[in-house]
Length: 88
Image (cartoon, rainbow, N blue to C red):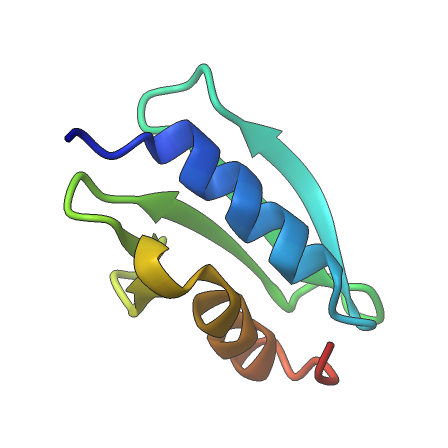
């Protein structure tokens, strides 16, 4: 069965948005590659763009692997940690 990367990114955006200090800036599922942009609500510089690789890995724009689609909540929590956000 093939991974639905768009659905995985939607789930990632939802979990990231549950963190008190994070805001989802954009979710672009039609672009190539599809991505979600997330930022710390209290900073204009603490932001990251995340894609979902074909193997189900969530990867930042600078190549850091946050986790997999098997545990989206943990991957979003790792991004929150990197962006200095409070837990969900």
